[in-house]
Image 1 (cartoon, helix red, strand yellow):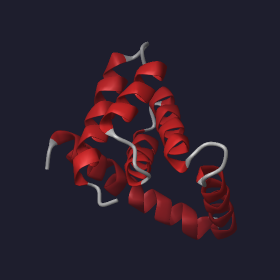
Image 2 (tube, rainbow, N blue to C red):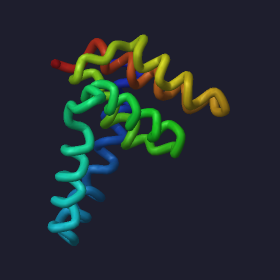
Image 3 (cartoon, rainbow, N blue to C red):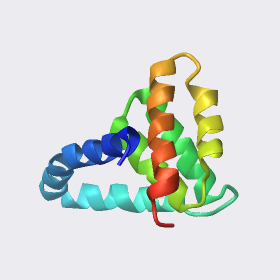
Length: 116
């Protein structure tokens, strides 16, 4: 497991208890968020792959490691390549090279390690 994949798993493992607590505290709100997310990320005029890449880059801009990790994984599962992720990240993160490098590491590790 390379550094990017370890970071990805570490981020999601770290957030798992918070997600569980939130889901238990506000189950209707959490269900609503999941429904909106599923609808927003479904194929339409833009493919799910493009929408996942957009969501991943929003995570980069906001510095949300959980968003980056989960949407990078979603993008790969939807067929995104490492090069597509790199180009998407490059367009939004020129102002913060550190975030861009971390995001590319995560995307690169997922490209070879996620079952589509």
